[in-house]
Amino acid sequence: MDRSLLLNLVALFISICAVAISVIFGMRQLAIARHANYIPALLDLLSEFRKVEFHEKYNFVCVRLREEHSPELGLSGLPLEVKEIVYSVLYFFQTIAKLYALEVLSEEVVMGMVRGRVVMMWRAIEPYVIKERESPLVDDHLLSVLESFAADAERFTGP
Image 1 (cartoon, rainbow, N blue to C red):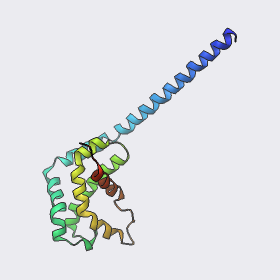
Image 2 (cartoon, rainbow, N blue to C red):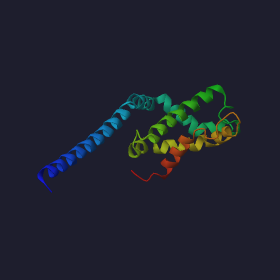
Image 3 (cartoon, rainbow, N blue to C red):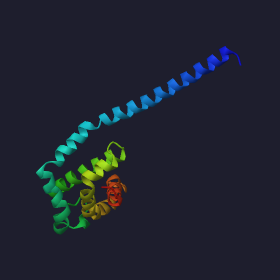
Image 4 (cartoon, one colour):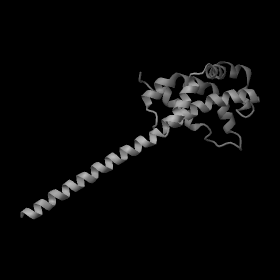
C-alpha cells in the first residue's frame, strides 16, 4: 500500500469520526432544547402544587368524593362545582403523566414527587372514569395516560 492511499484512508476515517461526533452532539442539543421548552409548564405545575387550595381539592377527591357522589354518575354527571374540583386535580396529574410519558421528567424525579398521591387519586377517581368510558360520547381511552402513570407509580420500588 502506498503512502497516498494510507493518507487518504486516515483522512476518510477522521472525517467519518467527525461526522459521527457532530451527529451525537446535534442529537444531544436537540434533546436539551426539547426539554427546555417544557420548563415553563413544569414551573407552573410546581407552583400549583405548592398552593394550599390544590391540596384541599386533592383531599376532597381522595376522601370525600365517593362519600358524597356516586361513581355511577361518571365524571360528567357530577355537579359543576364538584366537577371543577375533580378536573383540576386529575388534569394536574394527567399533565405530569404526559411529561413523564414524553420522558421530560425522569422516573426518579416524578415518582419522588407524586408517587403516593397519584396512586391515591387514581384509586379515588377510577370508578368515575370507568363509568365515563361507557358513554358513547367519550373515548374508551379517556385518561389512559394517567391510568398508566398511576400503575407505574404503584409498581415503582425506588426511594
